[in-house]
Length: 221
Image (tube, rainbow, N blue to C red):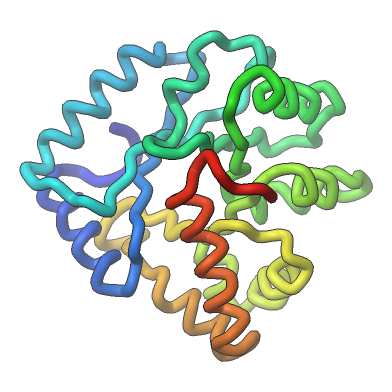
């Protein structure tokens, strides 16, 4: 689909390794870039990719990582890209200072549809939002995902744990793309969290994260 797995064999092995590491629900989110694709064409390719796996996984949900674009709130087809069986839409924001108009556009998506937005890998945006209240604001008004490497890398680990303690994180994503340079490694991140925050804190977080996916349309932030 994009810069991820090279073939179905690699995809199946990534899935196997993820479940082996204790993952209960795996969400596949290929990139959707609105300036180079149409939703229906994207969904057709995505469905073909799922079929190419040659296996059926009960705990595999299919969605998309939708790149933010100006006027997103006015899209008539945005709901097609949600994570299946939920009302969650994963959105990748631009790595630039977010304007008031951008944030209002995110609200517009939620107000116009039945969707709840999950902002992907929030750690990538923190530096460029310095001097604004954008990070605090979105963390308090939208669902937030952080990538596992933010917890694993010793240079950013303290920052990741700080976000967790502030209850700013709703999902942790493996961001796995392949079996070599970006393999499934979510177990390592959770072990770091257990070591630093304790088992009970991690179990509480896991319950919250799982409920968001299982209950989809029935949760409150």
